[in-house]
Amino acid sequence: MKNFRLVSIAASFLLFVFLCGTFAVCQEPRITPAVKSQPTPAVSVANFDKDNPPLFDEEKIPKYVLPDALKMQDGRKVTTPEQWTKERRPELLKLFEEHMHGKATLFRTGNTAFKTRFEYLSSKPVYDGKGIQHQFQIVWYRGNDEHRVAVLAYVPKTDKKVAAFIGLNFMGNHTVDTDPDIRIPLVWDRSRGAKHGTSAPGKETDRGLQASRWPVPLFLERGYALVTAYYCDIEPDFDGGYLHGVRRFLYKEGEKQKPDEANTIATWAWGLSEMLDAVEHFQDKLGIDPKKTIVNGHSRLGKTSLWAGAIDQRFAMVISNNSGSGGAALARREWGETTHKTNAYNLHWFCDNFKKYDKDIQSLPFDMHELIALSAPRPVYVASATEDTWADPKGEFVSAFHADPVYRLLGTDGIGGVTEMPQPDQSVGGIIRYHVRTGKHDITEFDWKNYFDAADKYL
Image 1 (cartoon, rainbow, N blue to C red):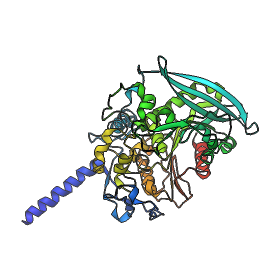
Image 2: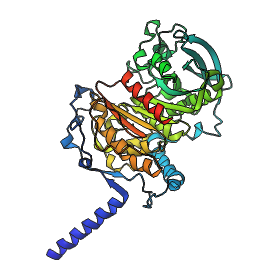
Image 3: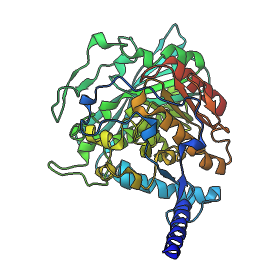
């Protein structure tokens, strides 16, 4: 019996060694967070899964190991930048496509389902001549059938081309600024419960409603352009919205998506690339340098910006603001909004294959530190908020921390030697940057000022 126990112990040890060869052991004491706990949010569990309430207790976080971003699926270690670029990065992209975001091959080169053109609409000086407002359109069409996305841009008045932040807004371009000349779109209403949603023209009274999230005067003062579009113009945000967005060109009536095909977040991400295409097309009119574009997004659109930055390396910098589950936060922590909850309440965001991991997230062949790493070696900024506990600020920081080895392999300073989660309202890191802002789930001037500072330094 004694010999049997010794053999069992030895076998267990060898299994542990094997697993460590494939996964990076991630027990969180390796990081000593300055912020040791997160407050329980004031949310009603009744709004979520009564039989599986959200977890907000660090003591109950499951033990987990993270996949090693620098380990190939066949076990080979990635040791050179060339190996990352030619082998591991494409492998990770394929894994994310197959198991989470879905394949978007019809959107890529060779697409015959529809065509694209860009239409320039108007320009005028704004803010006492400090900037120029531009409006233009992306038009996807097949024959006489057209789908249009209105794009709004503000560019500082200067003789040289400037860097630009490209991001989607939640409520329509007219809510970004009070200007009466901004075109008002059809606005989709997700609150009424209908599977196919309802839409109506946006309201005049909503002009500038979300201006606090898009501080145009600050953009102009700091010398950056802002390029934005209403995210539901690309595809409405509800299950079945693809029938009303650009993907309606891809499916015949009654045709169902395959489990590994791109869903809504991947479509929005592709739309961001189309916005960059339009910026490249109109760069001389706009006065924007398309080689200095920063893709940014908040909340579900932060999930979108991370994927856009991963699949389109033309974006020179990537920003994730309060993106949480399916964005910057580690899935394996199972904190707050878990993968299961994300998929349950937003069936349309990710491909159907991702739902296989709802109750077995530990078997997911990647985690979100590798999503962040797919932006390497470009600057990436992950931001959280102290009251946004649902999105797991600590999980977002730990994820950024574990993207560091890839960035260092590629010759950068990564997260700059940071090993502790910072106190609120402190921006830390190197080319991987992080902060946790005091306050709620939002994007504020504090966030923007830190993004401008990072862009000043790294672009």
